[in-house]
Length: 483
Image 1 (cartoon, rainbow, N blue to C red):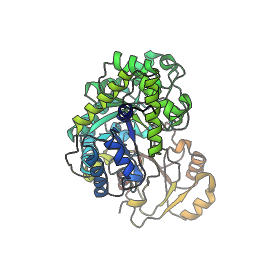
Image 2 (cartoon, rainbow, N blue to C red; image 1 turned 90 degrees about the horizontal axis):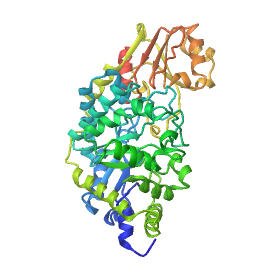
Image 3 (cartoon, helix red, strand yellow; image 1 turned 90 degrees about the vertical axis):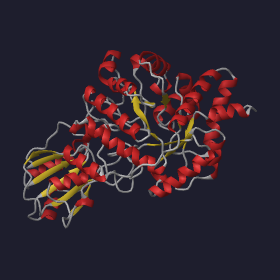
């Protein structure tokens, strides 16, 4: 890094770092004192609300205007409730209910939880329009497949967080809902004309801008008609041309985690991605979860070097830092709040349940949870009906690793309730379900993004629109199996 502490401090003012563990390490506190914009909290930083509050208090002691960000979407993506599952249904369930006033209430409650533990920037809501049934990373994080519905609920979510004094960060611009690959792992492509983007993907972003959203997060996706071969995060055409100029957005542009391969593959590493994102028009650079002091210093040094050699105008970095500083000053310390409005979450999840067929005589059922992997965004959060069942027996099986005869033998004469996420694309899932339904009473609970697939022969098909703790409770109640 050039021998200029002012450049280091300027670079730090654009960075959102992270740390491991439930106690804040001294280096993370010291960097905040040196000007670091803030830290993102992940599940590994959360043991209980009081512990999180202690951690955020320690960070705020280094600088009162520090940004403390978290991905608390409700539903399948939760950090505060990563050990149990969220007490709130997620966006897909709220979109299915289609009551924007309820969405505002739920997000106000989520905001209250964040305020109670000292966070002040929620990296939510997800406002992508999920138009691909097989989208591996958005799915139930989306309010739905209809742009107008997503726009209405996106604005309501932003307002709800604001009611609780929490800054919202809508994501992922210019729209991650049509992708069939995960930008954590590769660089997805949305190959559509700009007219399609404006009609299908961008209305929710226009809605949150009108609602006064504090921040918008970029997507590590390429849209050839807009970004060429570059991901939107690193594209001046996307961030400066489309978002700033065409949509007249004046708030903070936040990058999705720069450690994701959708960014690093395109830029050649995290530090080059940081420089390119600032040059494109981003203001706050989210590094990711795997962060230490050395990485923060390396990124800050790369930014400073780029300023010195003229590849990154100092005025651009100062503009970014000033926007971030204004957000931090405006949101300030969290003012308190009320924790988990559990009754609200459960009631909302019940309203989202959809039942096709007949649900009766299931009090003696064998519940079989068909295991499915989790995305990096979700993490390994518990899901399913298990916590909500009384004396009802439950098995957990991998569909590709068990035979129809084995499941039938385990059931004996009892009806089967098969529970899963994204069942239409779980290896062996559709075949196992339909073969069981051909010879046994079977009801299905779909807790992922609902596709058009409906298995032949089942007695009932229940859609929860998510796999949160609240969704699981609502499903167990609908089946008559709740403790």
